[in-house]
Image (tube, rainbow, N blue to C red; front, side, top):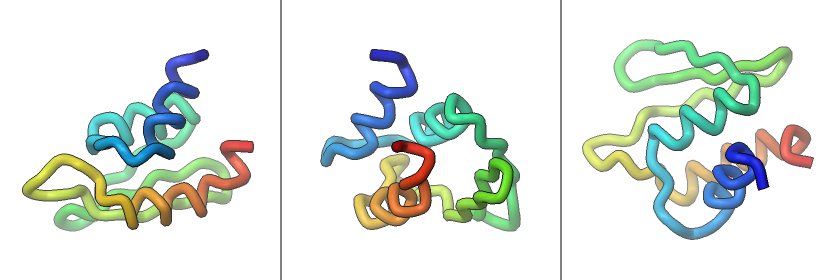
Length: 78
């Protein structure tokens, strides 16, 4: 299993997933990162843009945010 696939499987699971892991996963999938105002960050690739806030003070990404990201990545993960 590739590093990307391992990260994706961890992302889909209920285990903790950190901001650093998300940045790595998105980068491995070919997304570019653009910092916005405050904690806003956009990940973009071709015609797909995912806009989220960096988690704080905890570095773990909430499960509901992960579900939103997964819904947006549905076609990328097939």
